[in-house]
Image (cartoon, rainbow over all chains, first blue to last red; front, side, top):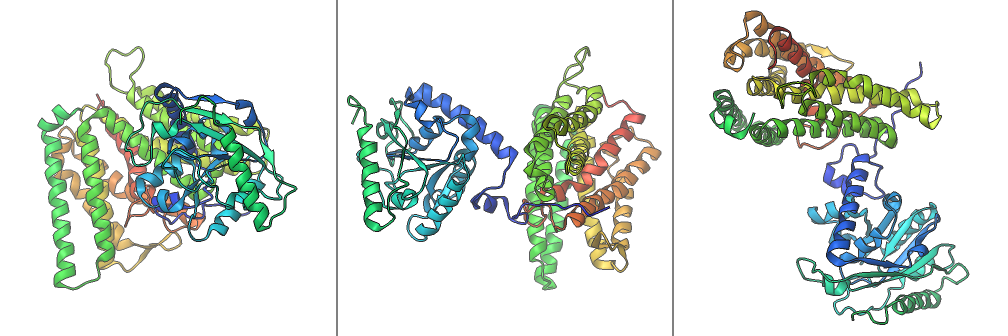
Length: 242
Length: 317
């Protein structure tokens, strides 16, 4: 008889907390179960507490890789975008989260790694490495990346400048980019407040676009970022709260 | 079992003091080694702090009553299986792991509910509990048929079945014992005795260890440690006879043998698995102990044997 080949997890000797920090994550039925359960609860809460509404649902129907780009005012934004995805795609959706904020303290790490399936994104140093990690993920069809190109939560509710990294990620690549506008999340949970408030939140999903025939030099990248920012801003509902 | 009963139950209260005093003595010995004899004890202290944590959590759960105990044991079994799946590579097959999780949860449910046509509530459904492996194995064997795949499936089936039967079902007996009339005595005794036997094996091995027990499986275990642990396990039932006052001499001897030999065989069984996979510990969940599975390995083997022995002589209820 030949010896069986055991394909152990790479980090079998790591403490559980350190394993949560690792990315890409190993498949784990327990985590999938917790995440699906959490997603159902979050969806229910969003509908009841924030009268959550989605416009343009059909724009997310694709089996190819997709980058979702949205404005960022509060932690609710990520939950809203995840709530717009079908449950079976949940474990292939990776919201990019600041590694300095979400991957240090243990409660935040737990929420980011298990509930949200966040991708640790280095904001200050090693941005290039984070971007190449994103590209590797997008190479697998069916991956969904959720990116807030402002890089931080807005403190005024207005859409800030988009960082050029988003342009570098998608310029010259055949990957669909769906701009989204989240309306009301600033009123619902502004930065610095401890608990969310029961305000209406609306998610508008725009038609996906593609930047595969654009160059990758500095100027093109900045133009793409600016164009995306305009696209997001145009989705703002006319009668929406400001 | 409930908090009100636990507060006034002499067995539970006795065990509380026994464990407290044992931990205090162990702490004193470790302190003596470190500060008087100036020995290197850092790793032993790490293990010791984890023991204190385990004892605290264990007492709280058993104190809370029957349902928390069974739920706690089930969660522990789920986590132990997760470690086994991670180490053996079964975790990549989400259908197989899902089937085993379902099986382990079913074991927990069978311990919680009572027979649908039984008169007494909250006694566990023994017939179903004993039958769960048949259903779980049927479910596991169904998976390759449903997905129409044969290549490499025997390995997955085998890993899933041993994971369920050994780690899920056999360990689940500890939860079923919570239904016994003498639950406090049985549960506290099994956990305390296997823990003490493990420590005794380590201590005797450290002091007198010369001859390797099973050199190919676990190089650090010695005959001296094993025999010392067996000696402790044989004396313990007589010292703690208040845990099961209805046991006769023959039952006490069997108890000693089951904990003393069964516990160490459980340790070695997990070592066989680890050795073949090629890892030192199953995981690094508890500092100084390794994974959950490394901690409960003796219980997994000894708890079902003890339960069936006790049940053969005296009805659990």
